[in-house]
Length: 291
Image 1 (tube, rainbow, N blue to C red):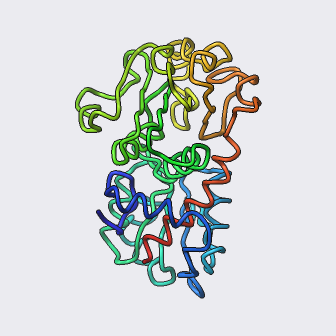
Image 2 (cartoon, one colour):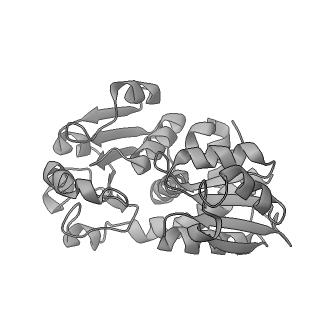
Image 3 (cartoon, rainbow, N blue to C red):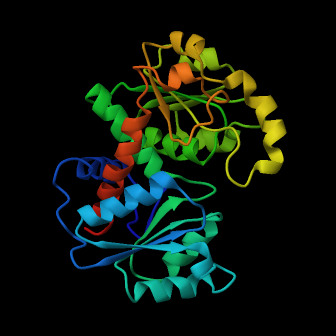
């Protein structure tokens, strides 16, 4: 367990549960009163920027948005020197990066905690929001069953790590070449399984989750991805094979590709609750890191 760099894989079960507890109510206090938080964005994001800025304010702090061109991680300045500069002014550094290695470099260079707002390998803040949403809708995480349909990307990876820690059943359905490797899948333990059949994955699931087929930086793979993942669209027919399931999506969604309008806008869609919970769990994560 480490408070130096927040990823789901760096947590233990007790720490993950504590972050979820801190994400509700007023248990977090105001640990950032009179302090600043640096928000470094190599990738743009509506939800991450808004949720993080509001979470910092709720903890009593002052958020400072920093565009990639202002720091140039590894180009204009080394990641280590950027971290040392920002640590002169801020009590926490949060970064949304293309290369996860930059997060490791930031965290190794300074004593202030570093929060991963997204990297090519992880999306811990999204996984926290997902788990809080499941807990809110069911009242408990015990006995939860989630089906993840599509590319086993950074969102799926952090969710799988969280489910493995908490003993939540997660079934991942992906086409060949888009799933977890056998080695990675084995590392998650028995809670996480993988199949090539979406119908098999959603059977008995209480939540059905998907993400876009083409993420930022994958435009040159768009045609191949769209072809391979087309049979993995979440539509009304697939949802009907689940257990009166809620629909989850990390957003932004490409309607008509990975999900239909009918599913996205249905009464069983929890995507806007997830989006709101990005703010609450960002607040909980920072409160835990600063404890």
